[in-house]
Amino acid sequence: GYGGLMGGGSLAYLVGTVACRRWAARFGMTGAVRRASWCSLAAGLSIAALWAAGVQAAWAIVLPVWLYAFAHGTHQSCGQSGVVAPFPGHAGAASALAGFVLSATAFGVGQLVSRVFDGSAWPLVLGIAAGGLCTACAGLVLVQRYGEPGPA
Image (cartoon, rainbow, N blue to C red; front, side):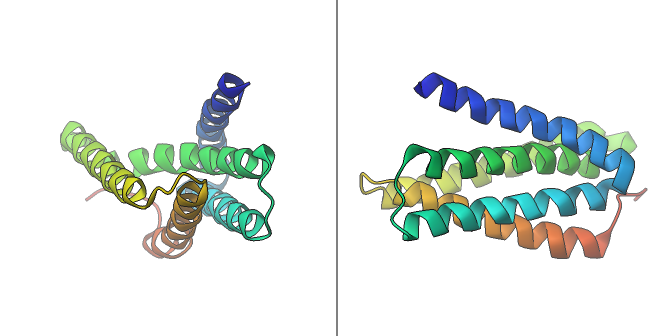
């Protein structure tokens, strides 16, 4: 059962990458990010609301995490395209820097969550809620303001 739940998260991420491709072709990069940002926000708010309401069933964690994974698949794909597009002559360096920033951020968040881990799901809930809110704010404000990637 646990493997199925974890596999579902990976599948949700992969579906998000496919959605990114389709949404970007149909709505442009900013439109794809906007749609995924609403998913990130919904995932963060729903996991926090369910936990705060005392719903501690597996589905109350798993479904919002899957939605978050879907949105992350879209955001990461669009983000990678946005990072390398303006720098065709330095796409490798831009990609490497973006990968480093992503890994360093994940490391920092992992360290923070491990410090507040208390044996409950609360650190996971808080992490997904905060991540969903921050990602949604960046996608709905910063990406929309600075628009489509273009030549540097």
